[in-house]
Length: 446
Image (tube, rainbow, N blue to C red):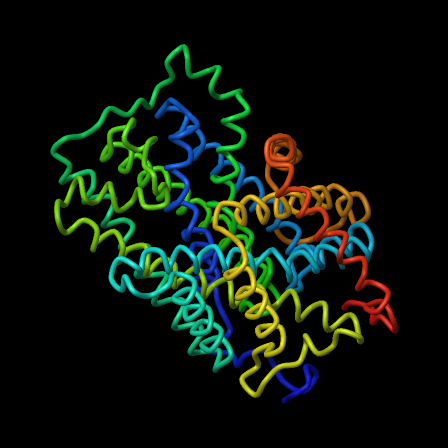
């Protein structure tokens, strides 16, 4: 086992560049959320226009966040995401809590959600296989890949992400072109839609959308390992987010055109609406096509989350001697203990939680810390006015829009789902128990 000081993270050929970084953004975003959200949204919102408006608003929210994180990454060019940004802008205590949340929840919980969905869709091919067991096998596979040589992990991610994007595009086009009984979808509002847009149900439904878009900040977590990072991070964040926004709009429009709205809202197994849409359009072959699409997409998502998440644990281990084990790398330059910690947490979430509760629990915490992180941009601009590199255009409009949307959703979720949010807040506070140990002989971050 090599120490962090004696080994480079990757050789020049295997270090991720702009394309791989953008692929990570796409891979972490296009995963579980878009294939489990629509059924829940249709059950709560009686309007196809309101549902499409959710996805537009979610995309704009993600783009505003991506702009802010791109400037933060330019100002603090180090892997670690919220951990390094909040430590620099506010205080190491807040940075440590952000890192704690990222380690315990921010990546392990989404890995578990994606793996549970993987198992549910694989069950169509292997009905005797428990979804949790199939999900656990996927988690172990991705961890093994990213513990190996960096070039292997890079090729693995590029291959599955490329296949995912091509298959999603092909699936959308097929749903639109081969649908001989299209359902009505309103793209302009009716008078009754305005009350829906400002309802509590719309805000709660927006949680599933923000979860579907989560991952727009993926490249910021690994900025220290990217080739040409000053240009790679903004390009990856913005190009990846814009591509996903377009994909989500077309995909959800295609789904709504393929399933009668009343049937969609009444589906007993709401996570399987993609299969139902494909069955309506492709007859008997629909289930196979939809399941294959989702399965390949989820492999890409779990792989990207398995790569990105441990880089935060690694940064914490570099700064806190008591946690230095997290920074240790193997002979391939992979943060081996950080990957194994995330692996164990993901398996625990996979076995102990149901998909919907896990999603709400994780997303509330992620929204809270992304709110604090975008707020940090105002602090850093005042403390360090001469920052170089990428700067947010039309500042301060994008961060204000992002913060306002985040606050609205967090308050709505807390009001409607207090149990999940309370557990989330307790998870944050639990990080304080580890702080006295972590602060012993703390290193100064570079």
